[in-house]
Length: 504
Image (cartoon, rainbow, N blue to C red):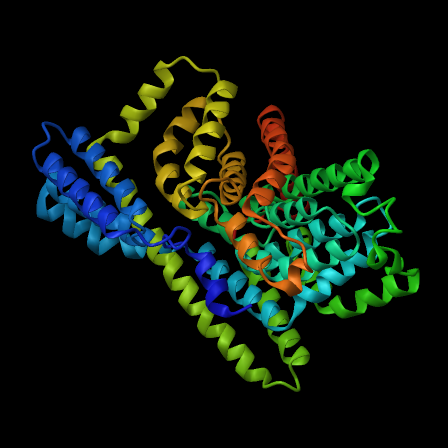
């Protein structure tokens, strides 16, 4: 997996969609012109702010980089409403205030760690471990793939990167074992949904910066929901293996010689496979053990884990230019971190626009006047984010909606930690949702390779049908999160009690 692919998944810039056609560009820039005219002729600041939000949406649909789509309309809007002094004030203060929080220093540490672990060839080893330990269950290869995907995307911070790596390794293995082709591709697509919930989560760190919540609790808030969702998908695969065994290659050994030839790993092979990921286990101990024990703050744990990743990469690549691999990872980290910080600056400018125009309290009032209960409001948000996920990537949705919704969430009594987990999960949901979720199209491109499809014809229709099998599990889990919000705060509260604080 190349580093550019990995990096681009960290800071979406509209690359999820194809480049707009000339007609779309003409219409889009015409709409931008209409927004500008509406802004400078607005009778009130609030109406002007609405025109700015409309301009942001148009720019995002035109695949303009997120940082520019957020910051340029915000700057123009502040100038139109409050003049040059306010504009100069935002330009001089927003870049520093958006990224100067000490807790955000954990972000490049997590990215660096993910880059190094990818360079060290960890993906194949984690997949083999999961395969060896779960292959004895009904649908065991799919279960192993599910847990391997959760672990890989958590470590690398890249759902798309994990999909490439695991898709090429996992789909042929499942097809060899006699799996239905739809079961094979569906398992790969949902296996990364939990990756940005389970720490270390780059998106949760970004959310903490936008929502001004402590990084440590935000990271830990996603751990339990992420693990539970992975187990829900695993339970679903086991259920399919029991109810319809032919879908997971059982009961058809005579017609599937490859499946019959595949032997169940021995206990010795299972324990031996763990030797290949010893470094990863050490990193987990340093990362989580440091935070649980109170020896490290989350920021310090990130730095310690990154140092362990450097040593691991040097060891694993000791015969293949080890320092060059470290240097490549460092350069990719600088690029990804810079891009993310530019996006966060844009989000800060959007927040300033909402404050100056008074849009935030107006929107809060409109929502509260609807008379929805907290649960009703959250169910409406589920529908809203699923629809938005068809057109925007996770980070775009977060940066566009969080500044607007936070005041309303406070009025509704919704925990900011819970909402962070909620919005990140919905963003991952959107990445696999037709018609323009990117993951199905990535899978479609992968399965065109004969080394992956093994002679099976796997169409886009097959991929979409497989999603109909798996997505109800995620929907039920979202509803469960609304019904049992305490699952997000149990682990942060536990660590807070045991370590005496973890905000740094």
